[in-house]
Image 1: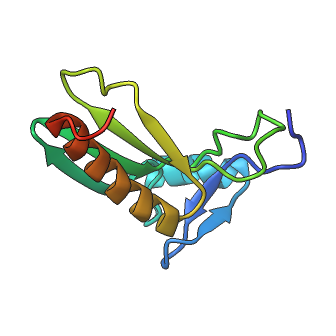
Image 2: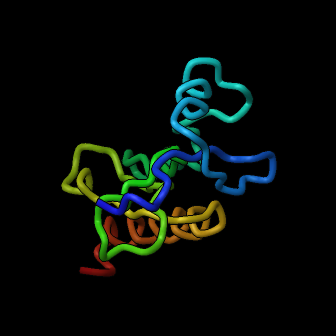
Length: 116
């Protein structure tokens, strides 16, 4: 475990990722405080599959010493097909927006058979 890295975060008013102590993280979950945890960044339905990108509020990479970048945003694909286990993670809001758009395009191409 990387003990020097913060695990909990919130978004400021400009969608910057801000480290917070655990107590503040818990307070944001309980009271929302204008900085919701697990807030949706983007969502789109493509032929019955939902591509969803969210801010998680928790760094999912903190326990892997090989990972040096935060993983506090996540894009997943939900639906009845074999796409359900797909997951992409990002460090910043801007990366999450770009990654979401790329995931939507990937799903569109995968459905039409244009990629493997």
